[in-house]
Image 1 (cartoon, rainbow, N blue to C red):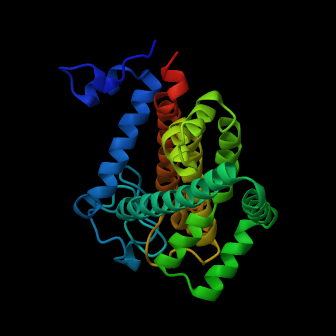
Image 2: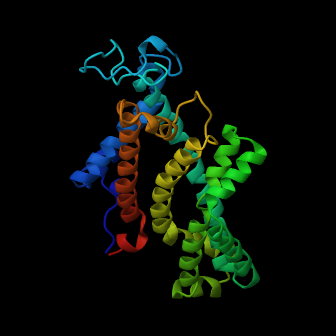
Image 3: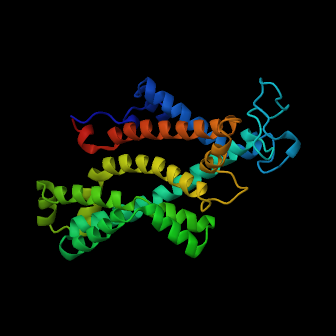
Length: 295
């Protein structure tokens, strides 16, 4: 018998019902995720300084509580005297935005092509999987370097590059699941009733593909953050002085022996984002999988 969904229980808010169904780790991940989103949204009001404001007289000042700490710089300053806390807040804001946009673009491209290949089959399937195999065979970092070198490294180009990173994983997963589902009796019954291929894909296949899509989406978010870090480290990501978490880690690596606080804040935020995304992704997978809800 189908379990009751959160909104099936009247008299309680959706957030209260969601909270009651989570275990301790999932609640922690939800709380961390909400805090991170709030920090990113409120960054302009929470940041104590302008993120790009330099003060060479305040270079390499440690966080509050250590000797030589500079008043007001709670997490210290970097090699140019910029406030680490302010740059972390703005970097979190931009990194989350880039990761979400890139993951959504990859999901739309990969799932559309994967569903098309799984439903259509034949030459369409061969063409899509040929493109997938080509993408997998070529290291994407080289592709990203080539595209950014040719078209420049503006934010719009970077978003497109990040969106193309990982679409092949969506396509492979969705295509494989769709190929299995089209042989199921309920799809055969819909086809016998005169349903068009696109109606079958939208009404009967997609609800059963939500679970693998959610799992891949959460994994893609973490991978995109790491890719952005790599591109920023190579000088082809978001250009200085704009802060992203990946760029802060990449630049601060050279100062780790003498000023580890330059990296610590950004690295901790990357870890927190990854933790929240992965745990909440597993929970969403279980809630979205119609096959699990029917047990």
